[in-house]
View 1: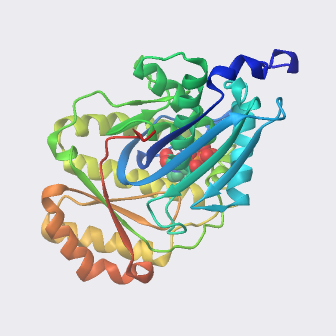
View 2: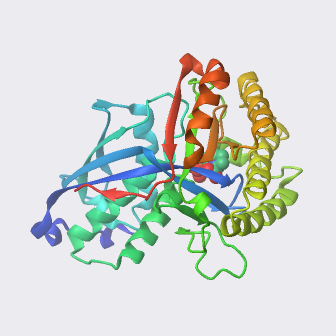
Length: 361
Ligand code: 2P0
């Protein structure tokens, strides 16, 4: 957009200031997004489970800026300025200012907090970027007075969240969400996520996720860099075929309630993600000895008890242990008896399948 097209401040005088706030959850991918083509377009479709209790709350106060034509904001994380997050937000706001021209007419005061402990090794970009995208969408609605249908509101929020962080596009929706074009599924897109509308068997409707914190340390290679290493990766083509195949199998198992099939696909995706990292050039390793020991324990436990427990991994060493609600006692005893010793300061986080973001203001 050229400078002359930037709306003049006086156009906004009626609704020149306000406050919006959203709570948005994190998610854990079951079919992994790893690798992109072009700008924030995934190489393959992904499918995730939206969490409930691990979320970001973001509040944005907006008011007309003194310097129209530039991005102007202050960012506070848990009450303090955080320059390293601020830089990511500056880039994001600049990128989406074509879509939200008001960003160059308003000053934003952004306050954000996470429910999960900072530096617990939990990826926060999905919840943080989705919360911010929803706030921007609400500001747009308030200052333009144009109210969209809920579906349209969320679709655009998901598109904006994707630009901030690919996985954030899925956090806009509760339950299970997919992002990325799935052949022959009209409602799917590379540009935004959508909620999974197919039948979900009851066994998958109350899934628990206990996140075993193997290490709280910041990882050495960012996801953004990891995605980049999928360009010219020797297994890239095979990975795209595998992800599509796994996605279709998983959809069948989610429908039929086949937990053994679910375990097979979900663990294959988790291990493949890290295998792709290791086979990158340069290769990198984000799992730790504790990750592998916990995986072995989980597989032994499953063999011995026949319990429906399955692990998955994010881009880090922590292990997500998924299981149906009715097995909570069995699994919690197992964690306390056999797994907790592998956790950093004995830490784990209990979470579960959630309903998606919530507007707070
Ligand atoms: C996912 N991850 O599907 C995969 C699996 C991590 C492992 O998406 O570059 O922070 O901001 O789009 O979304 C992490 O990458 O990357 C991720 P960007 P993002 O959840």
